[in-house]
Image 1 (cartoon, one colour):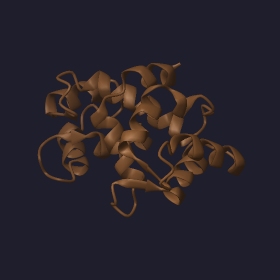
Image 2 (cartoon, one colour):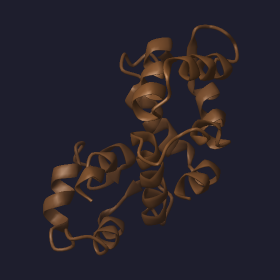
Image 3 (cartoon, helix red, strand yellow):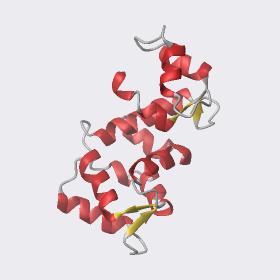
Length: 155
């Protein structure tokens, strides 16, 4: 199962991208509602299970999930024990695995060569320059994990 692999191999850069996606207010902390949204919307947890999980992850009891609390929770596999294969979170975990396979230099971004290699396995293999331009939001010539998540539904 891809999610089991993800829990052991996910890099801090990729986990940080995921954390930042849900840190809607940019505070550097997943507030209770932000974290519950992740748990309910992307992991398909029911309210009671989500609250139980939140309480377990908020180790210092300050009402928010810091990245220092989120990272070990995610990397140890606790994040994906109850996730169904149809949830968005499971699909994100699969995307993490695919991204890491393509990011051969472990830079946290796919350069054009790595992105081209990724596209060879898709129906978009002849559109490298067009897709790179569309996905590369910051114009650095690379595809970050956050940018990569934007194209997952295409594939």
